[in-house]
Image 1 (cartoon, rainbow, N blue to C red):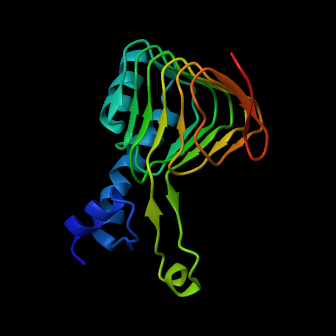
Image 2 (tube, rainbow, N blue to C red):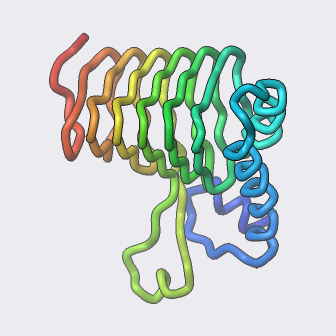
Length: 185
């Protein structure tokens, strides 16, 4: 399968297997991520420049505390006035959208990627991806894991240590493993 077809499948939800060219492309983003994580916080212009090159979008007045981990970076779009605490991990093999005024606690994982159940496909390194969206003014607590294909609705709060396997509607408090709506806010 050619590289263009692989990139198309990465964003379609179909099963695919990466090739050496996609892995080489990914390396340049990992290099940028390394530079971000090893730049002094006081070097704000340099930090901003690295994030602009690394991410699909980095909104105004948004901040990411290092360390930050991502598969690519280029598939992550961050809105305005977003605060991301220490040790965010994003498996962004397809689009991750974090909209305006979102707060993300420490040690959060957002994953767009999964693997097929069939053992023979997993042996070949097969995977598929589903986008993740975090709507405006959401607060994600510490140590939350967000699964592929999830949307978290506007103004909602996801409590610490939750595992979000399904969409969370707007204007709710949700927590637990699996994450469930506790009440409207």
